Length: 447
Ligand SMILES: Cc1ncc(COP(=O)(O)O)c(C=O)c1O
Image (cartoon, rainbow, N blue to C red; front, side):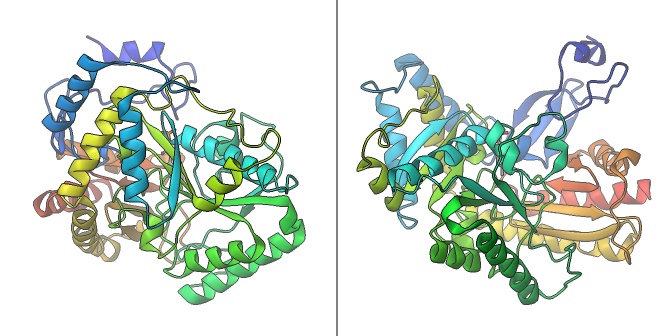
Protein backbone atom coordinates (compact mmCIF):
# COMPACT_ATOMS: atom_id res chain seq x y z
CA UNK A 1 0.00 0.00 0.00
CA UNK A 2 1.56 3.30 -1.06
CA UNK A 3 0.81 5.74 1.74
CA UNK A 4 2.70 8.56 0.02
CA UNK A 5 0.21 8.27 -2.89
CA UNK A 6 -2.81 7.98 -0.62
CA UNK A 7 -1.72 11.09 1.22
CA UNK A 8 -2.86 13.14 -1.79
CA UNK A 9 -6.54 12.70 -0.94
CA UNK A 10 -6.14 14.13 2.50
CA UNK A 11 -5.16 17.67 3.41
CA UNK A 12 -3.06 17.13 6.50
CA UNK A 13 -3.75 19.76 9.17
CA UNK A 14 -0.94 22.31 9.57
CA UNK A 15 0.81 21.40 6.33
CA UNK A 16 1.20 22.73 2.80
CA UNK A 17 -1.44 21.62 0.29
CA UNK A 18 0.63 22.91 -2.65
CA UNK A 19 0.39 20.69 -5.71
CA UNK A 20 3.44 18.49 -5.85
CA UNK A 21 4.36 19.21 -2.24
CA UNK A 22 4.77 16.15 -0.15
CA UNK A 23 6.19 15.63 3.29
CA UNK A 24 7.36 12.07 3.87
CA UNK A 25 4.77 10.74 6.27
CA UNK A 26 5.22 8.43 9.22
CA UNK A 27 2.16 6.21 9.28
CA UNK A 28 1.49 4.96 12.78
CA UNK A 29 -0.35 1.65 12.89
CA UNK A 30 -0.33 0.63 16.53
CA UNK A 31 0.39 1.92 20.02
CA UNK A 32 1.26 0.23 23.27
CA UNK A 33 2.26 1.95 26.52
CA UNK A 34 4.80 4.67 25.75
CA UNK A 35 5.59 3.20 22.32
CA UNK A 36 4.06 3.30 18.85
CA UNK A 37 4.71 1.15 15.78
CA UNK A 38 4.63 2.36 12.19
CA UNK A 39 3.17 0.39 9.29
CA UNK A 40 6.57 -1.13 8.63
CA UNK A 41 6.66 -2.47 12.17
CA UNK A 42 9.29 -0.03 13.51
CA UNK A 43 8.89 0.51 17.25
CA UNK A 44 9.34 4.08 18.47
CA UNK A 45 9.19 5.76 21.84
CA UNK A 46 6.35 8.27 21.57
CA UNK A 47 8.19 11.41 22.60
CA UNK A 48 5.30 13.46 21.22
CA UNK A 49 2.59 11.72 23.25
CA UNK A 50 0.32 11.66 20.18
CA UNK A 51 -0.06 15.44 20.14
CA UNK A 52 0.66 16.47 23.75
CA UNK A 53 -2.30 14.35 24.78
CA UNK A 54 -1.66 10.61 25.24
CA UNK A 55 -0.76 11.28 28.85
CA UNK A 56 -1.44 7.79 30.23
CA UNK A 57 0.19 5.93 27.34
CA UNK A 58 -1.40 3.93 24.54
CA UNK A 59 -3.62 0.87 24.74
CA UNK A 60 -4.43 1.03 28.44
CA UNK A 61 -6.80 -1.87 29.27
CA UNK A 62 -8.61 0.15 31.97
CA UNK A 63 -9.56 2.88 29.51
CA UNK A 64 -10.52 0.46 26.75
CA UNK A 65 -12.71 -1.51 29.17
CA UNK A 66 -14.47 1.66 30.36
CA UNK A 67 -15.18 2.69 26.76
CA UNK A 68 -16.41 -0.81 25.86
CA UNK A 69 -18.69 -0.93 28.94
CA UNK A 70 -20.14 2.43 28.00
CA UNK A 71 -20.56 1.34 24.38
CA UNK A 72 -22.60 -1.65 25.58
CA UNK A 73 -24.69 0.55 27.84
CA UNK A 74 -25.23 3.68 25.74
CA UNK A 75 -23.03 4.80 22.87
CA UNK A 76 -24.64 8.21 22.45
CA UNK A 77 -27.15 10.50 23.90
CA UNK A 78 -27.33 14.27 23.83
CA UNK A 79 -27.18 16.65 26.78
CA UNK A 80 -29.21 19.64 25.60
CA UNK A 81 -31.94 21.08 27.83
CA UNK A 82 -33.80 18.43 29.78
CA UNK A 83 -31.80 15.39 28.64
CA UNK A 84 -28.64 13.74 29.96
CA UNK A 85 -26.96 10.43 30.75
CA UNK A 86 -25.23 9.33 33.94
CA UNK A 87 -21.61 9.61 32.72
CA UNK A 88 -21.80 13.32 31.95
CA UNK A 89 -22.89 14.01 35.53
CA UNK A 90 -20.20 11.66 36.86
CA UNK A 91 -17.54 13.57 34.97
CA UNK A 92 -18.92 17.01 35.88
CA UNK A 93 -18.85 16.04 39.58
CA UNK A 94 -15.36 14.62 39.25
CA UNK A 95 -13.92 17.72 37.58
CA UNK A 96 -15.54 20.10 40.06
CA UNK A 97 -14.08 18.02 42.90
CA UNK A 98 -10.62 17.96 41.28
CA UNK A 99 -10.61 21.72 40.84
CA UNK A 100 -12.45 22.74 44.01
CA UNK A 101 -9.30 24.52 45.15
CA UNK A 102 -9.75 26.85 42.15
CA UNK A 103 -13.46 27.24 43.02
CA UNK A 104 -14.46 25.63 39.71
CA UNK A 105 -18.19 25.09 40.06
CA UNK A 106 -19.61 24.56 36.57
CA UNK A 107 -18.50 22.78 33.41
CA UNK A 108 -19.48 22.68 29.74
CA UNK A 109 -18.19 20.04 27.36
CA UNK A 110 -16.99 20.01 23.75
CA UNK A 111 -14.82 17.81 21.60
CA UNK A 112 -11.35 19.32 22.03
CA UNK A 113 -9.20 22.28 22.85
CA UNK A 114 -10.49 24.63 20.16
CA UNK A 115 -14.02 24.06 21.43
CA UNK A 116 -12.87 24.66 25.00
CA UNK A 117 -11.25 27.99 24.09
CA UNK A 118 -14.08 29.20 21.87
CA UNK A 119 -16.57 28.36 24.60
CA UNK A 120 -14.46 30.22 27.16
CA UNK A 121 -14.31 33.38 25.04
CA UNK A 122 -18.05 33.36 24.32
CA UNK A 123 -19.00 32.64 27.91
CA UNK A 124 -16.65 35.38 29.17
CA UNK A 125 -18.67 37.82 27.10
CA UNK A 126 -21.90 36.31 28.40
CA UNK A 127 -20.63 36.75 31.95
CA UNK A 128 -20.27 40.48 31.36
CA UNK A 129 -23.75 40.71 29.81
CA UNK A 130 -25.12 38.98 32.90
CA UNK A 131 -22.99 41.12 35.22
CA UNK A 132 -24.42 44.29 33.68
CA UNK A 133 -21.28 45.46 31.83
CA UNK A 134 -21.95 44.43 28.22
CA UNK A 135 -19.32 46.89 26.94
CA UNK A 136 -16.63 44.47 28.13
CA UNK A 137 -16.04 42.55 24.91
CA UNK A 138 -12.30 42.76 24.19
CA UNK A 139 -9.71 40.09 24.83
CA UNK A 140 -6.07 40.37 25.84
CA UNK A 141 -3.66 37.56 25.00
CA UNK A 142 0.03 36.85 24.45
CA UNK A 143 2.28 36.75 21.41
CA UNK A 144 3.19 33.18 20.52
CA UNK A 145 0.04 31.97 22.30
CA UNK A 146 -2.06 29.22 20.72
CA UNK A 147 -5.73 28.82 21.55
CA UNK A 148 -6.95 26.52 18.81
CA UNK A 149 -8.31 27.18 15.37
CA UNK A 150 -11.89 28.38 15.77
CA UNK A 151 -12.50 32.01 14.86
CA UNK A 152 -12.22 33.40 18.39
CA UNK A 153 -9.25 31.23 19.31
CA UNK A 154 -7.52 32.16 16.05
CA UNK A 155 -8.17 35.84 16.74
CA UNK A 156 -6.56 35.76 20.20
CA UNK A 157 -3.73 33.55 18.94
CA UNK A 158 -0.31 35.16 18.90
CA UNK A 159 1.23 33.63 15.81
CA UNK A 160 0.57 35.22 12.42
CA UNK A 161 0.70 32.01 10.43
CA UNK A 162 -2.72 31.08 11.77
CA UNK A 163 -4.10 34.49 10.78
CA UNK A 164 -2.84 35.03 7.23
CA UNK A 165 -5.44 33.04 5.29
CA UNK A 166 -8.47 33.47 7.51
CA UNK A 167 -9.14 37.15 8.07
CA UNK A 168 -10.84 39.36 8.89
CA UNK A 169 -10.65 38.05 12.41
CA UNK A 170 -12.54 39.10 15.52
CA UNK A 171 -12.08 42.80 16.35
CA UNK A 172 -11.01 43.80 19.84
CA UNK A 173 -8.26 41.23 20.33
CA UNK A 174 -5.08 42.81 21.70
CA UNK A 175 -1.71 41.04 21.82
CA UNK A 176 0.84 41.60 24.57
CA UNK A 177 4.47 40.54 24.75
CA UNK A 178 5.22 37.12 26.15
CA UNK A 179 7.27 36.87 29.34
CA UNK A 180 10.08 35.01 27.58
CA UNK A 181 13.58 35.31 28.97
CA UNK A 182 15.32 33.96 25.89
CA UNK A 183 13.76 36.39 23.39
CA UNK A 184 11.91 39.54 24.41
CA UNK A 185 11.69 43.05 22.98
CA UNK A 186 13.52 44.56 25.96
CA UNK A 187 16.59 42.32 25.62
CA UNK A 188 15.98 41.58 29.27
CA UNK A 189 17.63 38.56 30.91
CA UNK A 190 16.50 39.08 34.48
CA UNK A 191 13.28 37.31 35.42
CA UNK A 192 11.91 39.96 37.78
CA UNK A 193 12.81 42.81 35.47
CA UNK A 194 11.08 41.02 32.61
CA UNK A 195 7.94 40.51 34.69
CA UNK A 196 8.00 44.22 35.54
CA UNK A 197 8.18 45.13 31.82
CA UNK A 198 5.32 42.77 30.95
CA UNK A 199 3.11 43.94 33.80
CA UNK A 200 3.72 47.58 32.95
CA UNK A 201 2.76 46.87 29.34
CA UNK A 202 -0.37 45.05 30.53
CA UNK A 203 -1.37 47.96 32.78
CA UNK A 204 -0.72 50.51 30.06
CA UNK A 205 -2.74 48.49 27.57
CA UNK A 206 -5.66 48.22 29.97
CA UNK A 207 -5.50 51.95 30.66
CA UNK A 208 -5.41 52.71 26.93
CA UNK A 209 -8.42 50.59 26.05
CA UNK A 210 -10.24 51.21 29.31
CA UNK A 211 -10.97 48.30 31.65
CA UNK A 212 -14.65 48.80 30.94
CA UNK A 213 -14.06 47.47 27.40
CA UNK A 214 -12.04 44.36 28.32
CA UNK A 215 -13.71 41.02 29.01
CA UNK A 216 -10.80 38.71 29.69
CA UNK A 217 -7.12 37.92 29.51
CA UNK A 218 -6.41 34.46 28.06
CA UNK A 219 -3.06 32.67 28.22
CA UNK A 220 -1.39 29.29 28.56
CA UNK A 221 0.42 28.72 31.88
CA UNK A 222 3.34 27.43 29.80
CA UNK A 223 3.14 28.22 26.10
CA UNK A 224 3.25 25.01 24.12
CA UNK A 225 2.82 25.25 20.35
CA UNK A 226 4.32 28.77 20.33
CA UNK A 227 7.68 27.41 21.34
CA UNK A 228 7.61 26.01 24.86
CA UNK A 229 7.87 29.29 26.70
CA UNK A 230 8.03 29.03 30.48
CA UNK A 231 7.24 32.36 32.16
CA UNK A 232 9.11 33.57 35.24
CA UNK A 233 7.58 32.15 38.43
CA UNK A 234 5.93 35.39 39.56
CA UNK A 235 4.35 36.36 36.24
CA UNK A 236 0.97 34.68 36.63
CA UNK A 237 0.46 35.97 40.17
CA UNK A 238 1.15 39.50 38.99
CA UNK A 239 -1.28 39.09 36.07
CA UNK A 240 -3.93 37.80 38.47
CA UNK A 241 -3.47 40.91 40.64
CA UNK A 242 -3.82 43.25 37.67
CA UNK A 243 -6.91 41.39 36.42
CA UNK A 244 -8.44 41.59 39.90
CA UNK A 245 -7.80 45.32 40.14
CA UNK A 246 -9.45 45.98 36.79
CA UNK A 247 -12.19 43.37 37.02
CA UNK A 248 -10.86 41.47 33.99
CA UNK A 249 -11.52 37.72 33.87
CA UNK A 250 -8.49 35.44 33.76
CA UNK A 251 -8.81 32.47 31.41
CA UNK A 252 -6.17 29.75 31.75
CA UNK A 253 -5.86 27.75 28.57
CA UNK A 254 -4.77 24.48 30.15
CA UNK A 255 -5.42 22.37 27.07
CA UNK A 256 -1.81 21.12 27.16
CA UNK A 257 -0.85 21.91 30.76
CA UNK A 258 -3.98 20.49 32.43
CA UNK A 259 -3.86 17.11 34.21
CA UNK A 260 -0.23 17.03 35.09
CA UNK A 261 2.04 17.84 32.17
CA UNK A 262 3.95 20.63 33.93
CA UNK A 263 4.37 18.65 37.15
CA UNK A 264 1.20 20.03 38.76
CA UNK A 265 -2.39 18.97 38.21
CA UNK A 266 -2.87 22.40 36.62
CA UNK A 267 -0.20 24.67 35.23
CA UNK A 268 -1.91 27.65 36.87
CA UNK A 269 -1.95 25.82 40.22
CA UNK A 270 1.80 25.42 39.83
CA UNK A 271 2.06 29.20 39.55
CA UNK A 272 -0.11 29.64 42.66
CA UNK A 273 -3.01 31.16 40.75
CA UNK A 274 -6.71 30.31 40.42
CA UNK A 275 -8.14 31.45 37.08
CA UNK A 276 -11.81 32.35 36.55
CA UNK A 277 -12.18 30.05 33.55
CA UNK A 278 -10.29 26.86 32.72
CA UNK A 279 -9.94 25.43 29.20
CA UNK A 280 -9.27 21.70 29.30
CA UNK A 281 -8.83 19.02 26.62
CA UNK A 282 -6.03 16.66 25.50
CA UNK A 283 -5.04 14.99 28.82
CA UNK A 284 -8.66 14.97 29.99
CA UNK A 285 -9.24 11.86 27.88
CA UNK A 286 -5.62 11.22 26.85
CA UNK A 287 -6.60 10.89 23.20
CA UNK A 288 -8.79 7.80 23.64
CA UNK A 289 -11.97 9.67 22.62
CA UNK A 290 -12.09 13.39 21.70
CA UNK A 291 -13.16 15.60 24.60
CA UNK A 292 -12.80 19.17 25.79
CA UNK A 293 -14.19 21.04 28.77
CA UNK A 294 -14.56 24.63 29.90
CA UNK A 295 -14.95 25.28 33.62
CA UNK A 296 -16.20 28.36 35.45
CA UNK A 297 -15.63 29.56 38.99
CA UNK A 298 -18.29 30.66 41.47
CA UNK A 299 -18.13 34.30 40.37
CA UNK A 300 -19.18 33.36 36.84
CA UNK A 301 -21.67 30.68 37.88
CA UNK A 302 -23.39 33.11 40.23
CA UNK A 303 -23.60 35.95 37.69
CA UNK A 304 -24.94 33.83 34.85
CA UNK A 305 -27.38 31.84 36.96
CA UNK A 306 -28.90 35.01 38.38
CA UNK A 307 -28.60 37.00 35.15
CA UNK A 308 -31.63 39.00 34.15
CA UNK A 309 -33.39 39.00 30.77
CA UNK A 310 -31.79 36.57 28.35
CA UNK A 311 -28.36 36.56 30.02
CA UNK A 312 -28.87 33.30 31.92
CA UNK A 313 -29.60 31.38 28.70
CA UNK A 314 -26.66 29.20 27.67
CA UNK A 315 -27.18 29.30 23.91
CA UNK A 316 -24.00 27.39 23.22
CA UNK A 317 -23.17 23.70 23.04
CA UNK A 318 -22.53 20.89 20.61
CA UNK A 319 -24.18 17.67 19.48
CA UNK A 320 -21.22 15.96 21.11
CA UNK A 321 -21.17 17.99 24.36
CA UNK A 322 -20.60 15.36 27.02
CA UNK A 323 -20.42 12.39 24.65
CA UNK A 324 -20.90 9.25 26.80
CA UNK A 325 -17.87 7.41 25.38
CA UNK A 326 -15.66 10.46 25.95
CA UNK A 327 -16.94 10.88 29.52
CA UNK A 328 -16.37 7.18 30.27
CA UNK A 329 -12.86 7.35 28.79
CA UNK A 330 -12.11 10.49 30.77
CA UNK A 331 -13.22 9.00 34.08
CA UNK A 332 -10.93 6.00 33.52
CA UNK A 333 -8.05 8.27 32.44
CA UNK A 334 -8.46 10.50 35.51
CA UNK A 335 -8.38 7.39 37.73
CA UNK A 336 -4.97 6.57 36.24
CA UNK A 337 -3.70 10.16 36.48
CA UNK A 338 -4.58 10.27 40.18
CA UNK A 339 -3.75 6.71 41.25
CA UNK A 340 -0.35 6.76 39.50
CA UNK A 341 0.29 10.36 40.55
CA UNK A 342 1.28 11.27 37.03
CA UNK A 343 1.77 15.00 37.74
CA UNK A 344 4.55 14.09 40.17
CA UNK A 345 6.09 11.67 37.67
CA UNK A 346 5.95 14.36 34.97
CA UNK A 347 7.72 16.76 37.35
CA UNK A 348 10.55 14.45 38.34
CA UNK A 349 11.14 12.62 35.03
CA UNK A 350 10.76 15.93 33.18
CA UNK A 351 13.41 17.56 35.37
CA UNK A 352 15.70 14.60 34.77
CA UNK A 353 15.17 14.83 31.00
CA UNK A 354 15.83 18.58 31.06
CA UNK A 355 19.11 18.00 32.90
CA UNK A 356 20.15 15.42 30.32
CA UNK A 357 19.31 17.75 27.44
CA UNK A 358 21.03 20.86 28.81
CA UNK A 359 24.55 19.70 27.82
CA UNK A 360 23.40 19.81 24.16
CA UNK A 361 23.51 23.57 24.50
CA UNK A 362 27.21 23.48 25.30
CA UNK A 363 28.08 20.96 22.63
CA UNK A 364 26.19 22.31 19.61
CA UNK A 365 26.35 25.86 18.25
CA UNK A 366 22.87 25.38 16.74
CA UNK A 367 21.24 24.59 20.10
CA UNK A 368 20.59 28.07 21.43
CA UNK A 369 18.32 27.14 24.28
CA UNK A 370 17.01 24.07 26.06
CA UNK A 371 13.94 24.68 28.19
CA UNK A 372 10.85 23.12 29.60
CA UNK A 373 8.72 22.41 32.60
CA UNK A 374 7.63 18.92 33.55
CA UNK A 375 7.20 16.81 30.46
CA UNK A 376 6.98 19.61 27.94
CA UNK A 377 10.42 20.50 26.63
CA UNK A 378 12.10 21.99 23.59
CA UNK A 379 15.40 22.65 21.90
CA UNK A 380 15.49 26.11 20.30
CA UNK A 381 17.71 26.02 17.22
CA UNK A 382 19.60 29.15 16.18
CA UNK A 383 21.98 30.38 13.49
CA UNK A 384 24.43 31.36 16.23
CA UNK A 385 24.30 31.60 19.98
CA UNK A 386 25.22 35.25 20.25
CA UNK A 387 22.41 36.67 18.10
CA UNK A 388 19.88 33.97 19.08
CA UNK A 389 18.50 34.26 15.53
CA UNK A 390 16.11 31.35 14.97
CA UNK A 391 17.14 28.92 12.24
CA UNK A 392 14.99 29.50 9.18
CA UNK A 393 12.27 26.80 9.45
CA UNK A 394 12.17 26.60 5.64
CA UNK A 395 15.65 25.07 5.74
CA UNK A 396 14.11 22.09 7.53
CA UNK A 397 16.90 21.55 10.05
CA UNK A 398 14.60 20.78 12.99
CA UNK A 399 12.70 18.32 10.78
CA UNK A 400 15.98 16.60 9.85
CA UNK A 401 16.89 16.29 13.54
CA UNK A 402 13.45 14.80 14.27
CA UNK A 403 13.95 12.38 11.38
CA UNK A 404 17.34 11.33 12.63
CA UNK A 405 15.91 10.76 16.13
CA UNK A 406 13.12 8.67 14.64
CA UNK A 407 15.65 6.44 12.92
CA UNK A 408 17.01 5.86 16.44
CA UNK A 409 13.61 4.81 17.72
CA UNK A 410 12.38 8.07 19.24
CA UNK A 411 9.57 10.30 17.95
CA UNK A 412 9.96 14.02 18.62
CA UNK A 413 8.26 16.91 16.86
CA UNK A 414 9.75 19.67 14.75
CA UNK A 415 7.85 22.96 15.08
CA UNK A 416 9.48 25.76 13.06
CA UNK A 417 13.01 26.05 14.54
CA UNK A 418 12.19 23.96 17.61
CA UNK A 419 12.40 20.30 18.46
CA UNK A 420 9.58 19.68 20.90
CA UNK A 421 8.96 16.83 23.33
CA UNK A 422 5.69 16.05 25.10
CA UNK A 423 5.81 12.32 25.91
CA UNK A 424 3.23 10.39 27.96
CA UNK A 425 3.35 11.32 31.64
CA UNK A 426 4.03 7.64 32.32
CA UNK A 427 7.54 8.11 30.89
CA UNK A 428 10.25 6.32 32.89
CA UNK A 429 13.75 7.55 33.70
CA UNK A 430 15.22 5.01 31.27
CA UNK A 431 12.95 6.25 28.52
CA UNK A 432 13.94 9.85 29.28
CA UNK A 433 17.56 8.79 28.85
CA UNK A 434 16.64 7.17 25.53
CA UNK A 435 15.15 10.47 24.27
CA UNK A 436 18.22 12.44 25.35
CA UNK A 437 20.58 9.91 23.74
CA UNK A 438 18.64 9.83 20.46
CA UNK A 439 18.65 13.63 20.25
CA UNK A 440 22.34 13.81 21.02
CA UNK A 441 23.12 11.35 18.22
CA UNK A 442 20.63 13.02 15.87
CA UNK A 443 22.28 16.41 16.37
CA UNK A 444 25.72 14.87 15.79
CA UNK A 445 24.43 13.44 12.52
CA UNK A 446 22.81 16.70 11.36
CA UNK A 447 25.29 19.35 12.52
C1 LIG B 1 -2.98 25.59 24.44
C2 LIG B 1 -3.86 25.01 23.39
N1 LIG B 1 -5.13 25.45 23.29
C3 LIG B 1 -5.97 24.95 22.37
C4 LIG B 1 -5.58 23.97 21.50
C5 LIG B 1 -6.53 23.42 20.48
O1 LIG B 1 -6.86 22.12 20.78
P1 LIG B 1 -7.48 21.15 19.66
O2 LIG B 1 -6.40 20.90 18.66
O3 LIG B 1 -7.88 19.93 20.44
O4 LIG B 1 -8.67 21.84 19.08
C6 LIG B 1 -4.27 23.47 21.58
C7 LIG B 1 -3.81 22.42 20.67
O5 LIG B 1 -2.67 22.07 20.60
C8 LIG B 1 -3.38 24.02 22.52
O6 LIG B 1 -2.10 23.63 22.59
